[in-house]
Image (cartoon, rainbow, N blue to C red; front, side, top):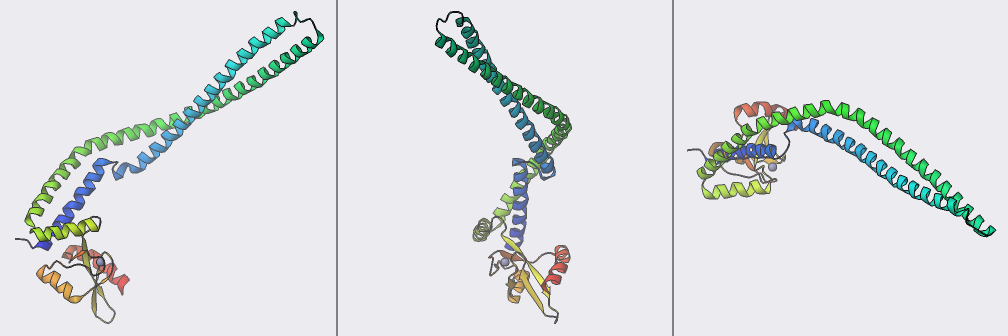
Length: 259
Ligand SMILES: [Zn+2]
């Protein structure tokens, strides 16, 4: 039967892979993150241009309603001009007519400026939509590919969930509670490998692979020989000794930086 430490190492690994799979299923996979960000940005730009065009169109409509109202008023004043009897009334009416005419000219200028804005937005839109089409197609294709991949990942997650349950059952209750407490506190990284540092005088020292704090030689012996559940004095993670293959790749740089 496996030692609790060995089961804990396997459990940590299964939980990490399970969380990675669940994170993927909830969001966008890493391999399409870049394209997705670009897609969102371009789409946002297009939406902003559409909004600019809409706002300009609404402004233009408002100006045109006021133009036709003012034109009606102007016609009324011009009819009244034949009916006035005093010089003062005549002068006042001419003043009104002038005001209405300059208001109309002002509004026409506004409406024209709006049309220019609409044209500018529309030609940018045409350009951007053309460029977006290709991006959109690639995005759709990647989304479809992601949809195809999802069931496999979901299945993998399901298997890992089963594995996690089995491993939990294998562990004696106190050791399981101990592991889970540390797993919770460390945000899902309950384990730390013991790393060896060769000193120049030939002395060997060990340190925690998570926080670099020294690990006492007796602790190394207890973990390695008895599979003792011991924590790093500093970060309180459970210490373990990496297997041969893992040690080969990680030992060299650790020795280089530690010496
Ligand atoms: Zn540590």
